[in-house]
Image 1: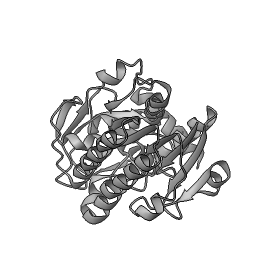
Image 2: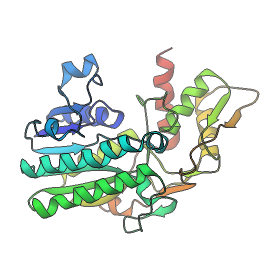
Image 3: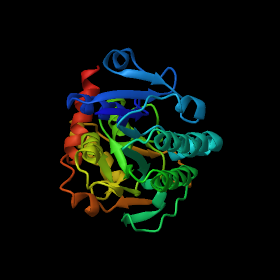
Length: 305
């Protein structure tokens, strides 16, 4: 199968592309200019494209399936530049939707976010969407565009995955606004001080990258996968507990572990946990525990020393 992955130079996109290729698929990556590594250029057909530019999007080759991951990700980044957030997440998705309709793409998967729920505990797919941040609002707008495709291209099978807090090796740990688990492991590698952007008592649903990829691949492997799904573990972890588990996993023996709240955006929800029963009913389930996932992150970080 020929598959286009937008945002292919990113964290989730890169892992997804690698897995799809290993299963014999022809994978084409699309991302902004300057994003692709030399390794990626050797492994895949890489197309530099800004999805917020309709002219560029319409030049993309026709494929059998599209995974649309390209986005501005994160609440803090969205607040800094509302127009960029809207262009990438909403306008960019609209352009990809029009590309899907024009080329009569058979399979279309969009990665949304738990941010569409706003402050929610154990949110299910039928829960009222009440985003509290511009990021969540733009992702919800994008979801509506994706669902619009069905009315114009009824033969296209569509799936939306609302991904909760994904983490794993290879995540950008320089960005303190996303990828909390990976960031904390990187900070532990440097000192006994963990800087937290927001309350230590916030609750999050953390899911390992391999489990995210396996769910995304389920879309092209199982023709019953259609509609909207939460991509999460169904387990709630406080930020304070996450740091404790990360510390235990590292094996370090600091006399004192400092947890410092450096402040964060007010729009960041206190409670953001999900219900994954709908996806689990399709014989998918997360296989990696938080401790196991953090250990893989730690091994990767230490291997680079």
